[in-house]
Image 1 (cartoon, protein in one colour):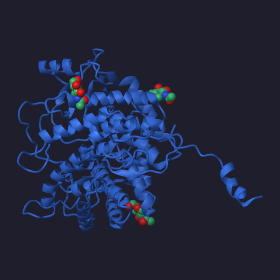
Image 2 (cartoon, helix red, strand yellow):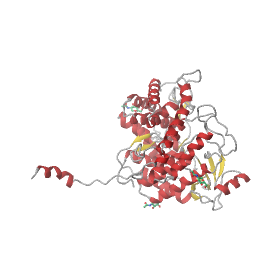
Image 3 (spheres, helix red, strand yellow):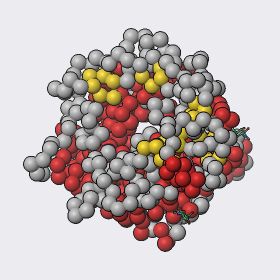
Image 4 (cartoon, helix red, strand yellow):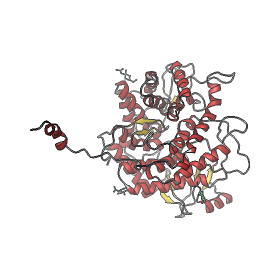
Length: 506
Ligand SMILES: *[C@@H]1O[C@H](CO)[C@@H](O)[C@H](O)[C@H]1NC(C)=O
Ligand SMILES: *[C@@H]1O[C@H](CO)[C@@H](O)[C@H](O)[C@H]1NC(C)=O
Ligand SMILES: *[C@@H]1O[C@H](CO)[C@@H](O)[C@H](O)[C@H]1NC(C)=O
C-alpha cells in the first residue's frame, strides 16, 4: 500500500458531514452606490457620542456618569458600556479604549443608591454589552468578562429560594428583590447572555438560571393560544398572571430568544424550537392580517377576553427579522414570505409620516370589520388610515431600532436592495429631524407626523448607540462582517459568537 493511499483513507471513507444551514443570502455584496452610507452612520455615531462623552468623563462641569446600574441608566450610565461593541465594529478604537478604561474603574458590586435595577435591562445592556465586547476584541480584555460576572453575581439574587422565575428588579445595595409579578420578556430573555457567561467562567449556574427560566415559560400550561405565552408571570407560583398575548412589550424578546437560544447553543433540547414554531403558527392563524391598503401585513394582539385587537408597535417590529432568521434555520419559505410582508408593513409606518420616521405605536382599521381596540378613533385618524393602511396612536420616536433591525435582516437574508433604499431614507430623515440644530447630539422627538419643526424630547437612549446605529452601519457594511451565519445578536444588538450551524434546526 502506498503511503498516500493510507493517508487518504480516513477522508475518503469518513462519514460525510452535511453542511450547516445558512441564514444570509450567499455571495451578497453591497453595491458601490450605497457604500457612502456606512461612513454617514459612523459620523452620526460620533456626533451623538461626543457630547455624551464630554459629560460622562468629566471633561466639563456637567453631570458625571452614573457609575452604577440604575433605573435611569438608559439615558446616562449605560451608554459607555452599551456602546462598546458598536465602537469595535465601526473601528472606533480610541473610543473603545476609553470605554474599557472606564468600565474597569467601576465597582459594580456596591452602590449607595437604594433604587432597584432591572434584571433584564442590566443583563441585555451591561452583561451582553461586556461579553460581546470581550469576544469582539479577541478576549484581550479579561476585565470585561470579570465585570460581566460581577454584575451577574448580583443579578442572580433575583432568583429567590426555589423560584425558577426571577423577580424583575433587585437592589444592588442589599441584594433584595422587589417582590412583584414580572413578565415573560424580562424573565425569559436572559438565556443567551447567561449561557455565554457560563461558557467563559466555567460556572454552570448562570446558564442553569437563565435558560431554566425560559424553559419554564415554554413548558408552562395555560397559553391562551398554543405556544403564545401571555405577558405576565408570577415568580412564586411560576404561573401565568394574565391572558394578554402580543409580540410587543412585556413579551417580545422571550419569543425572540426561543429560536436564538437554539442557534447559539445548538442544544439537543427541542423545546425551544418547537415552542417558537408553535407560537409563529398560532400567530399566523389568529393574529396575522393584511393591511386594508394592501401595503404589508401586521400581527394584532389578543386581549384578556380572547378578542383580537388590531394594534401594533415599533417594539413589535422586531418580529420580521426574527421570522426571517427562524425561516432560514427551519428552511421554511412560507415564513420568509410572511416575514417580508411584516417588514413592508413596519416600513410603511416610516414611509407614511411627514418626517419619514415611524411612531411608537399604531393601530389598524381591520379588513374583517373586527375590533380595532385602539381607543377612540378620530376623523383624522380614519383619513390617515384610508390613505396609509394604519393610524398613529402614540406619535413619539425615542430612537428605537426594531424597524431597522428587521430591515437589516431583510437585506442580509433576501438580498433585495429595497432594504438598502429604506435604510438610506431613514438616515436622511434622522439627520434632518433628530439632529439638534446648531449643536452636536441626536434626540428623541415627540411627534413623527407634524409639519414644521419637530419637538425634541431631550433624551438619547443607549440603544441608539448599541442598536439603531449598529444595525444601520451593518446594513451598508460587507455582509461577511458580523455575518448572521457567525453571530447571534442579543436583543440589544450585541453580537455573540455562534458555533458552526447544524444541518437542520427542525
Ligand atoms: C457560580 O455562580 C453562582 C451565581 O452567582 C454563585 O452563587 C456560585 O457561588 C458560583 N459558583 C462557584 C463555584 O463559584
Ligand atoms: C412553514 O411554517 C408554516 C407556518 O407555521 C407551516 O404551516 C408550514 O407547514 C411550514 N412548512 C414547512 C415546510 O415546514
Ligand atoms: C415610500 O413610498 C413611496 C410612495 O409609495 C414610494 O414611491 C417610495 O419608493 C417609498 N420610499 C421608500 C424608501 O421605500
